[in-house]
Amino acid sequence: MAQDIVPIELGLPQGDVVTLWAPRWREDGEDWEAFLGDEDDLYGFPDAAQLAAFVRTAEEHDLTDHPAWPVVPKLSVPELLPDESHQFDLVGVPELAAEDPDTWTIDELAGIVAIVRSLADVCELDAVNDVLNAAEGFDLLDQGTFAFSGRDGERRWTELATTIVERWDEVLDAIDEVVVTPDVDAAALEVAAEELAAFQAEAEEDAEAVADEDVEVLDAEDSDADSEEEDEDAEPEPAGFWAEVGIDPIKIITDGSEYYTLRCYLDDEPVFLGTGGKIDVFTSARALGRYIASGELDGNDLTEVSTWDDVVAKATDGTLDVDVHIDNTYVLQGLADDIGEGPNSIDPTQLDLAVELITDAADWAGDDSVGEALSESESLGWLISFVLRPDPTRLVPSAPFDAEVEAWQKLVNAFEDRLNAH
Image 1: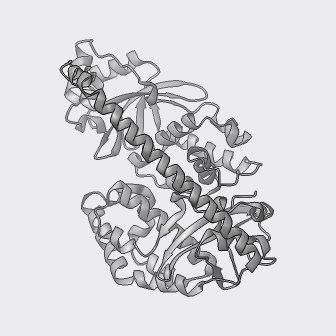
Image 2: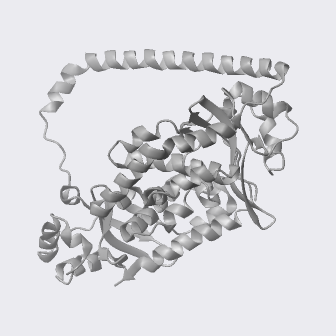
Image 3: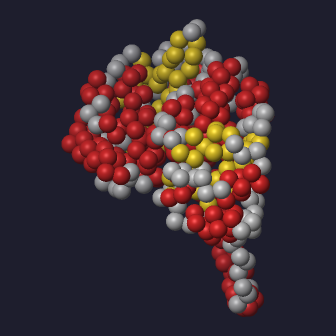
């Protein structure tokens, strides 16, 4: 199956360089992954204009046999600019390791480590693999903060940070050594440089226009200040019982059933009504309320929430209203068929919610297989990222999508196996 070829930026000791990455794709029964280069050299360019000049004129390199390559030489210079999610600051990794392991730090570090692993595998950089195998935490970044919580988590993060402080220069040196900038055609470079300059000038004009609009908005807000002050004395809308207790009723629609259950977040980590990785679900909101009122929830993970007694009290006196907000309604039904038809057939909102639910359940159960399957280095993860984070500079994933459907259905089946229906 043809996968995308993606512009990426690498922050290296020699400076920021742009190149092309072909995430893992399957062809003739084998898995492949590649970067723009030739044999032992990884090609890196100081800007997108030089990259464009090269891909438009070069006849032989490691990506020429990629199924999507014929499209690349036709791309404009702006289309070869790496987006924010594909800018990897390898030099800044020690600074990340010095931070607390919150969601943002771990997500950024996970993305950098993932691309470094790919570079090590494709370029056969044993020194890089030695460093990444020296601390358990490198393998657990995809699990998010869960893997670095508690006493064991603190130990993992300390070990990871120490390894980075002591050995990350080995990673930088190994990658820096294989990066070279090949010669580019002078005429092609002149054309590409003009494209880049025109794009940058237009971007500056747009930024100035936005700044002017912001000033106008601020002026309008100042003129309305008096009327707004009058509204400040009004009583705020009540937050509602479920918002007050910090627990959400959720509704799950599968191909064959509808279920109700509860979920909350403690320190940004999901907690479901259930235990041992099994989620207690009910075919009606009323049945869920009766279960809560029954008092038979000893050992259930949600009973540890400080506001749980408030929920039980309302369920017991019959005043608990299990009202599911639209943002907490998760429809898995039909998504596999939509994925099979390609990105244009997939509802991004439905997919985003489904991914949230499946990921939350896996995180709660301590299962890292979902994070691995949704990684951008996997075909399913790449398709999902294309739908959820659209970018006009990215190539549209190509059919057939049989592998993605199979991988998605596997995730859904595993999730449904977690449901303990009452």
